[in-house]
Image 1 (tube, rainbow, N blue to C red):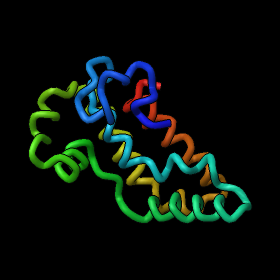
Image 2 (tube, helix red, strand yellow; image 1 turned 180 degrees about the vertical axis):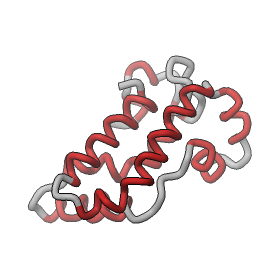
Image 3 (cartoon, rainbow, N blue to C red; image 1 turned 30 degrees about the vertical axis):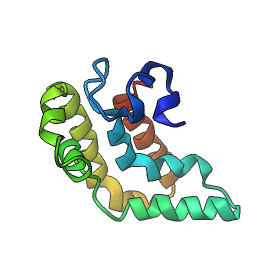
Image 4 (cartoon, rainbow, N blue to C red; image 1 turned 90 degrees about the vertical axis):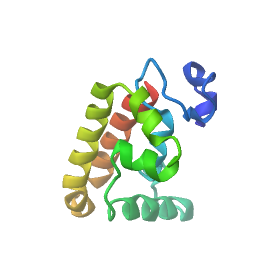
Length: 130
């Protein structure tokens, strides 16, 4: 679902600003989007495409919050970071660290889909307040 369609984020088009109730810019969920495709992984042509996208995400490190902001919004990353809740940033960066430490093992795990889904759900809760 696009950020604009999440009722409590409708006043923050694209989630590009820091959401006061969340303490983060919801736009940072975009770093996790390929993991969100896990629900589409099945034995169909589209499911196999989704699986490749998810597995490709497991081969590169997930950026921290500030790394994402600096890459996406170099002109306002510092302002967004200053406006963000330091505790929320720390929680998200802890999730990023955990993911980055486990991503290679997840690739070969029998339950890799469940593990990816868990990380995606946790990122959604932190970044979208779901």
